[in-house]
Length: 72
Image (tube, rainbow, N blue to C red; front, top):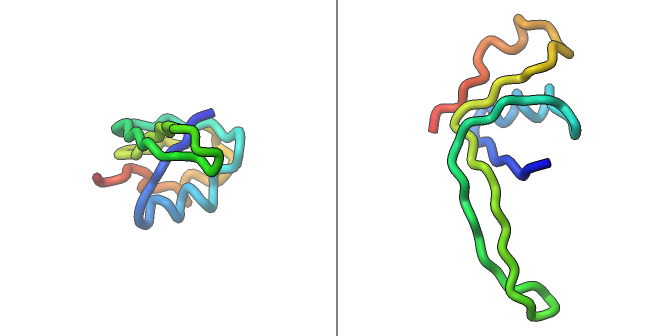
């Protein structure tokens, strides 16, 4: 599993139609953040900032998913 960030109206589509374990094709860029945990240990976190998201399973009507490309 990967952490994915989606913005705008496309985030609303993802929120409505994707659940943990849902299959999706994601294109985007990687963003890595460094921080210090509460225990004082340096940590890093990497996420995908989505430019495009395609739902791979047809769990909902195709009419509801007209526009799933995310404009960066």
